[in-house]
Image (cartoon, rainbow, N blue to C red):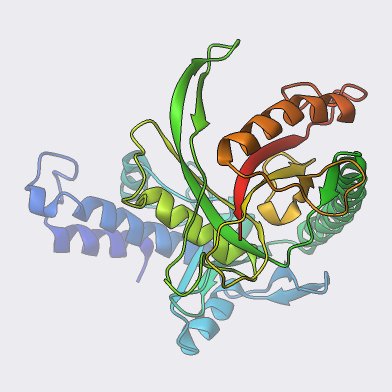
Length: 355
């Protein structure tokens, strides 16, 4: 069946022939869009054809395959979801559907991605409904596929170089922090969730609202332990987000609520020994907590972190040490490295319970 005949058939089924875009019943308002989508899919199939297209495999080599047959092979394997569409097309508006419905030519040059103007196709799929999307791109010409493979290789090399440079930069700044005479590197093997109410304290010199934590709490889902201990940062972060959405009832959080993940040893005792500071530094703004370098305040010459009897004593200590740490690292209050304004670090600090 030709494209024009198929469109006439769709119009007849929907009952919109002659009044395609007039006022329709709300129950059928979506039908013109569905018809346009059907015509669009037919046009894509026609433009792709039965011949070979070209794609770049996982090894970076170009191989010839037909996108439609590839998509059908996935469907035959009962993949959860398979979609064939022009590369980069995510959403289409009503005007796009209207244009599709109005055109009667399979290779209409006025329609984007129609006929020979369709240069690249992506096949998107999910093997199971729990999987993320996988995208495989097909190019009409081998030359375009080769160009894409070369661009991918260059990008991979660039990413690897940037990652190596960032890793070296992270190590350098982590060493700078832990080498300060009043700091000691934190070597705890796991993580715990800490939370606190944050009471408003006015505004800073930039006019930004500020607050001060009036305590530090540990989150636990078991009375047999002082806190829930996580072996990895991902599980800890999930718990921190959950209690941020639903703060514990024992905290007055009207002024604000904070939760975070910090390194912690695996302990079982409930006797509170005091509080220690926890500094976290990352040279990459927006990096995951796992990329942080953690350090604690210590007495000069001491081989262990300093433990404060009260939260307020701990807070006053880190509040004073924070500005000194920035100065000794050569960083301004906004995190800009004074010796290289293209570099930014993020330094945070808090007080945590020790058992």
